[in-house]
Image (cartoon, rainbow, N blue to C red):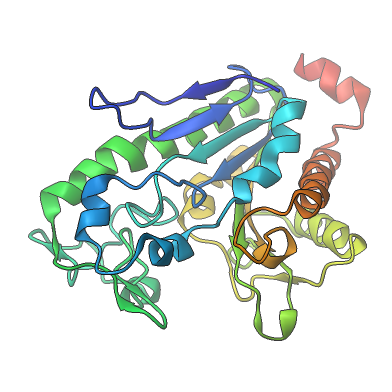
Amino acid sequence: MSGAISGAGSSTGAPPPFVRYGPVEPQYPVIFSIPHAGRHYPQSVLDAARVAPSVLQRLEDRYVDKLADGVIGCGYTVICASYARAYIDLNRDESEWDSRLVAGGRPVHPSPSRVRAGLGLVPRHLYGVGELWRCRIDHADLCQRIAQVHQPYHAAIADALASARQRFGRAILIDLHSMPKQPGGEPQFVLGDRYGLTASLQLVDGLLALAEGQGLSACRNAPYAGAHTIERHADRSRATEAVQIEIDRSLYLGADFGPDADAVRRMTDMVEALAASAERYLGMNDPGWREAAE
């Protein structure tokens, strides 16, 4: 397995904001980001919660990082969050915070629907549960979370994409998520491209066809069209595309909400196949293209 490079940790023993797998210089033009699989809960967050830790865990894309083990082993660059989504949601813009939860300061922009629903930069409310916290958090605390976790994480993604683009002339970001089982069990695989803004139809069609070839029901942009990460890092004018991929977590988690080894292996193989499909789209099967990149 390729080595892991961690973002700077804290002198208090807190984990780094992310773990970056793969060589310093990206070996492939396909980069993976995993913003919602972090499992570190600072004690202050647990103390402030009005719900049990098991309820906060429902916000996670539980163990979706395990599905990246195969691409990590192949040497792909993978940037995985360390902190739980309950602490800070890395798939939200820095301005997407909820004034009903944060005391002091004022949001720069009007709240989008996901913030109003309680799923902003720091989740406030969970459907079927209600309010998550005993009291509001201070704006200075929010700014600290942004500076120590959110900004370094996205800087690492930007750096990896820039390095890949410099080496290969183009780059693709796959933002990997999992989703609850949908009503009726479908779709099982959702690809978001912000309705064509962040990726070409050719790339999207290839990835959807691959998922369908694996026997999964697949859909584009519904119910998840992608959020901050792909909006922020896609730049088609600079040959950088980005997609958000959601995989039904019941396909790889057991009844105890833990990973099922055989099911994880099957989904890991599919994630590897997704990376290969993205490379084929970029022309990586042309030896001359890789030689030129070298």
